[in-house]
Length: 96
Image 1 (cartoon, rainbow, N blue to C red):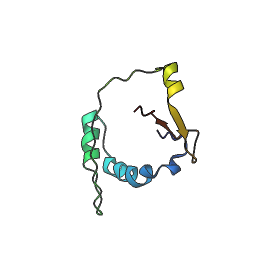
Image 2: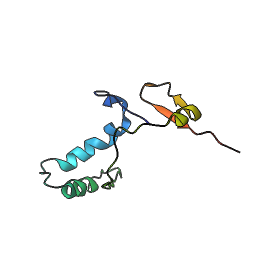
Image 3: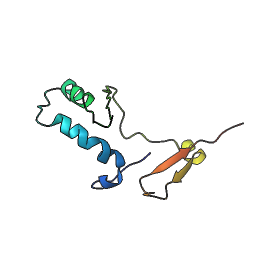
């Protein structure tokens, strides 16, 4: 997982390469519904061939879920060298 803290978007390459074009595509539009926003984002493209596709997730996600103690004991968590406080991987144990 990669979590970027507030005001550190300069570390996120997607924000610099994608969101500026999405912002231009949405400029001047009134967001009256989620479908309007989706259609504007889907129309985003550049002269170099960037095309954007979007989906709307309507799943309701549970908040404040806790992991089990068994999970914590058996899973190896590897923190990244770069922004290790926010970037980490969970590596499951392979049973043979």
